[in-house]
Length: 301
Image (cartoon, rainbow, N blue to C red; front, top):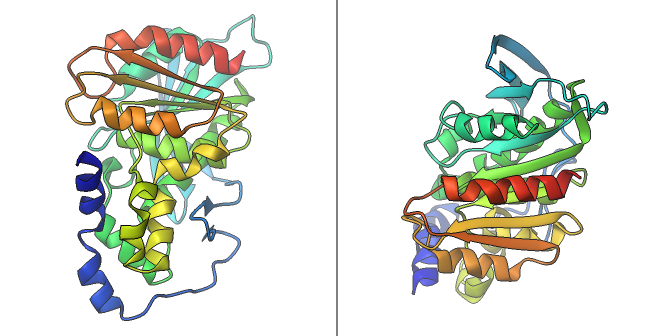
């Protein structure tokens, strides 16, 4: 029943959109952006322009306010680089850190500080729409043959990874995606599209379960199916290996049920791991920190 409600929420808007769309649009996508027949989003490797707006000493790290280009917009981020690690002359590993909906890059600095203390650089983003999604608007945009905001948000994460790789203090071959809640969904997709990444840690999140309801979705046409597949992290799970896929979830999560997360995890391929905690919250809690440390070390070793 929970899955049905989730899918119903995603497609409840379809009737009105289809009435106004009249036909489905099969416009050609250029090299810069396309969705495959299987619903896989495709982007070339981003080449963002970036600039530092400010910097400050943050104890064991330097914190930079940074702005970088992505799909016609300027994305704001906080880049945190720990003090040089003499045992890592090639540079420190980096993390693309994607907050949940309504969470700012500043509010994500608790996790960034944890990572810095472990010797990892990070870049946390102010995501478009503050990490929220507009399914109705994005569906209509896609049916009109244009690029949805949710796709651009994936590109923003990919561009952030390239900003990390441009920094001389960071090892460009050791980049991991970490996301919380809705940010975890974008982290999964971005990691799958970034063949240079080391893997993904998805905290307090799950996929949409589109494939379980595919017959229901097909009633609204093939382009609608293609769109929903393109935004469902579960569509991309097969693209992650040989990189590592990790989920961390609480049995008492107050927003996304543990059962929903477990269903997504069961669809993932090896190498993978799921760590379960019991804190009554949504998003990162202190019980998760040892698993974050363990999995980060495994991915970048």
